[in-house]
Image 1: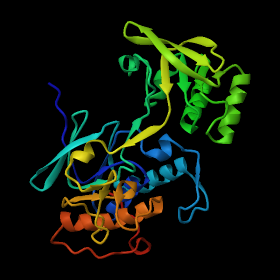
Image 2 (image 1 turned 120 degrees about the vertical axis):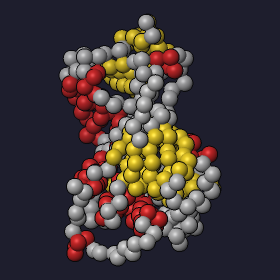
Image 3 (image 1 turned 90 degrees about the vertical axis):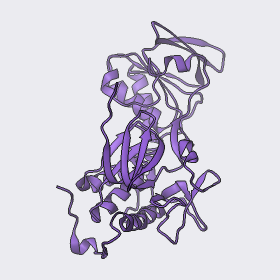
Length: 342
C-alpha cells in the first residue's frame, strides 16, 4: 500500500500562474507559508505553456516583458519564502478537518492548509487532445502532452505536432540536442509563433536537423508491445507519410475547465467563482478565496495586474483567519525590506 506524506502549510494555492506566484510573495511578507498545486508540470500557467515568448506591455515598471521572463521574475521574487510545489497533479476534493482544509489530488496526494486560494486562471488547464483512434492506449506510452523531463527523450525518434510557441520551442530544443532529426507536423502553412522561432525552424530544416510537414496532420498511430512506434501523416494533397516515432508530442494548447472545483459548493456564475470584492475576494465558503481570472464580481477585469491586486488583499484576509487574535500593521517594503524564511 502506497503511503503519502502529509503536507501542511498556512495557505494552499491552487494555480501556479502569475497571480498564484505573486500571492506567495505577499503572503511571505506577512510570514505566512504557501504551497502551490497545479495540474501543469511547471510553474507559469498559460504564460509558460502557451506563449512564453509573447511580450506583455501592461506590467507596472516594465514597458515590455516576455511572458516567460515574467514568470522567472515572479519565481525569483517568491524564492526567499520557500514555497512548496505539487505539480502535475489536479486538486480534486477538499474537506474541513478542525482548523485545516485538506485537499486530495487526483494522484492521491493530501495537503492541509488553514486557507485556500484558488488562483487557477481560467480553471484546470488540460491538454487539447487530437481525436485519433488509440490515442488513450498509447498515452504515457509514447504519447505525451507535456514535456516533463526533456533529457529522457534525447535518444528517441521524436515527432511534434503544433504551430504555436510551445511546439516550436520544443522542436528547436530537441533539434539541437537529439542525434535523430525531429519531425514537426503542422496543419497550416503558417505558424502562430514568435517570428524568431519560425526563422530558426526553417534554418534547422535546411541543416537537416528537422523534417517539416506543413499543411499536414497525423491521421493514425500504431505501436507494438503497448508502445507507440509510428505515425501516419497526411497532407492536403492526400499524400501520406509513415514516420517512425518513439515519442509524439501533440502540443495543441490547453483547454480551460473548472473541473472538480465546480463540485466544491462554491457560488458560480458562467463557469467562474463568485467572490465578495468588498471582503478581500472571499468566496461563500469561509477560508476559501478566489483570485485572478477564475473569479467574478461586478466590474471584474481579467488582467494580470488586477490579479496581483486581488492576491494582495486576499493575503490580508487570510491573515485575519490564520491569526485572528493578532493585529497586523501594514509596513512598506522600503522600510521593512524582504526577509525570507530560514
